[in-house]
Length: 114
Length: 116
Image (cartoon, rainbow over all chains, first blue to last red; front, side, top):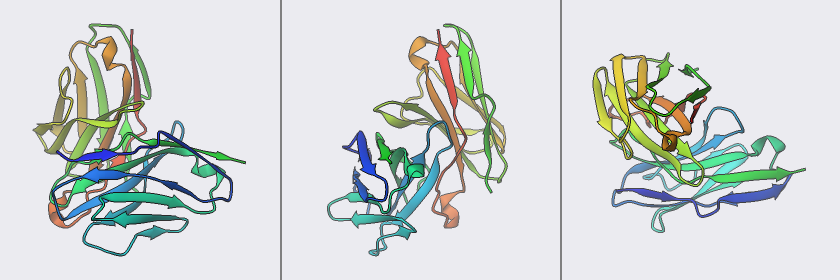
């Protein structure tokens, strides 16, 4: 079974600084999707960024980018120019290309200090 | 925009009560999911459904059942609530990946259930 591990239960960053959240996963598949989701306090979980495993280029969405290392099975999220609104729980998730279910990591609670 | 609506944000129930958590999505998604979120454990899949009247067990189905009589609605049922089912319950939906979609999930706001 696939597993997703987020080894940092909590992280903090100063406003305007850069922070990197770590995620590793285990799979025997060669084709899959990886996602980062954001869950603000008392609010809905939303998708931040996605990466398709067959694409070597790292995905980028404005201030959010990933470092996808397929051989190492690592998928980290970098948040640049951190803003107070980035404070949230962040979840890494994995999905097989042909499947429907997502497997989630334990989550990383990000605090942004003014 | 996709909208996934969960009927109750907060519920307090007593041990042994039957609990219904309702979820409705408005984007004609084939797949619907129920996850449970607990601190330090992330999201764990309880059940999912890929079509009307179809369901599959997730990783932690014990103590739960589901119902999907209409495409837009997916219900989670706790037949006899227990204190260890106190948790945040998240409903989500997605398009069928076989159609070339990424299958990303769209979530509801969550239902926080407390069982006393």
